[in-house]
Length: 527
Image 1 (spheres, rainbow, N blue to C red):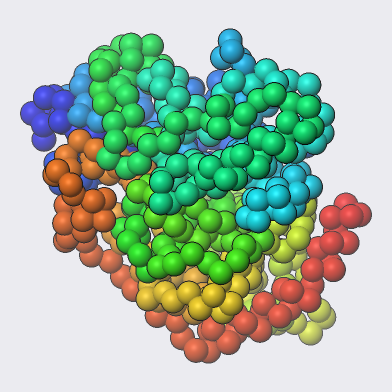
Image 2: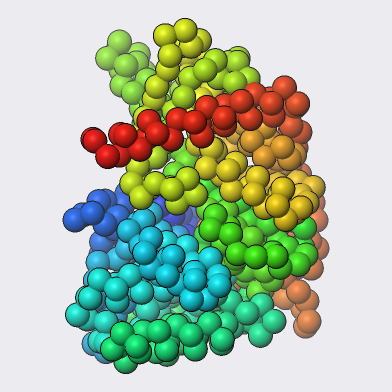
């Protein structure tokens, strides 16, 4: 391994997630050989969920450094060369720049839900569901709000596209990440031309001169070369100065696309679900949906195939907050408890609870949730006097509610469109504790849920695989073939099947969850 790394054959993947920037180095067999990370958090400023871009650069350097230190400690090697690099990040969001490369407005993350008017108006204009978090939905909302900088915009991109641009000088984007900016035509593998024309005409009528196709990055598909790491970029990534420029980089992708790759879910009739700070399920379709649905996004795989995506802003944040309360209690009692052990204990305790959570009700809405019609969120727990208020039910209801909005959206496409799923591939923090997350997810979606051994590496590993595909694919080899034969051929994993009593219990919980929206609405309106 020492010779492999020192000769520059290893491949690097970096993903800027919601709470962690993770760096994964992979070897000849596409398995991780070193890992680094850096924890960070978004912040709410002037009503906008955002990250400071300087924090992003600091974090990416720290994450790279911890990976490089891991390599030095394990193998006694200092990294100077790599065969390829991939950058991934949270999809969607709003980043716009002028001709001096200056940021014109604070970075808006996917978590923001202040674009309902724009989303509805564009949906009618394009006859296409334009989610509130999509980049051009934010752009159009800023136009509707009369922001004065609009005609100064020369470049709009995502977080992954921005990082890639600064590392290479190339204003490009992977097609899966581009699908979080504007609708994609999967036949031509580019932005939908008819919708581009409608959008440009609409904003021209409002007195603006920009053209959305001219300010968005160029689309590339998996396997294409997206430029090379330049000298300035090498220094921005590795402040030690050891990393050399000239390393090929694959198209930057969003966490949706890298999640599909990390779970081998890019082929038709496969699906994956990512559950962490947010939760989303992605199903690769055999055919297009019959009509637009407000709760279903149409995106693509990194190769451009059509994907139905159900994305929810909230998942485990409130559950994590409650676990922290239990941790604080333990510390106050003089107990030193390993945090991972605490999560594992509480998650497994949930399996002892009633299938319907004993009548307990919770909402995990740290932010708004478009699927259920909330522009803002208030984390909430409520019970009746005769509800079965036990620790097991308390943890179980917070696991259930982390999937309540997802269940609502998934039921729509499974029932209305008769979309079939043989298995969902799970990844993300919800699945770190063995079996529990799978069991809860299987109950919610009524589908077998599989977790692979490597799925815990998540999107950073997924983008490393995309870089590996670019570097190592055979002539004409598809991404589906590369994953099947070069990455996952010996992959092992566990499958949890839904149990009827648990499915029925989740459905009973969902009835209460839906009936209680008035409680959540009252909290949003009055607190």
